[in-house]
Length: 236
Ligand SMILES: Cc1cc2nc3c(=O)[nH]c(=O)nc-3n(C[C@H](O)[C@H](O)[C@H](O)COP(=O)(O)O)c2cc1C
Picture 1 (cartoon, rainbow, N blue to C red):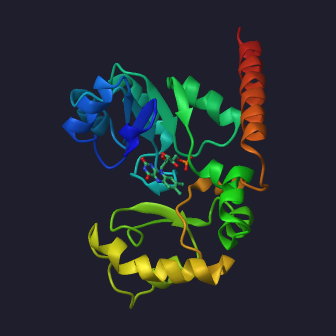
Picture 2 (cartoon, helix red, strand yellow):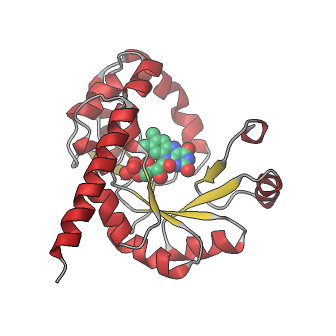
């Protein structure tokens, strides 16, 4: 479906895209990125023909591995010779500058866009966003209850119920998603901030206001420049 649109990039999590997808993308001049939680994943992506590796650390929202961004990014930068984007826990210019210092060519952000005005407009007033704005960086949990594979979600009554001793074990992917799909629909209709089911990373603790994307970008760029200048002045 993506290939039928004028996209410039496709990105794949949970492994490289299938070879025919990589070939089709390249035939149309579309770049292919893939997420990696280990240097080994990154090497495999490049061997499969992936153009850009997204080094995504443990603190990220959604499916995520066990190695923190701080450790993972330089490992992946050293392991491959394609551009690397740092991901996981980025929501300020200081974090962008840190990612560049770790050797990344750029950054890839996910969670932070969930509290942008554009996303709010597409959803209407949502309990999910209220819950995100109220959360601290301690309020996430990496759990298999969303899809069957470890993913970082907002900690709510729903994730806590699954963590109880007598709760069943999540099913393997793709069965868990089928099992909880109806419950997720009901949760979404209930519109209760205490029971949302939402992937988000630890950076949620910095997401305190709904802002337009343009303002988020401006602030990120200004703070990145300011940080790089500050670091330049530390020299010698
Ligand atoms: C709500 C949500 C959904 C996501 N869905 C996908 C997805 O379908 N495919 C994918 O490659 N990454 C997905 N991600 C991961 C992002 O691409 C990105 O790597 C991650 O959010 C970066 O970490 P951050 O959340 O700390 O910014 C998702 C992340 C979030 C928060």
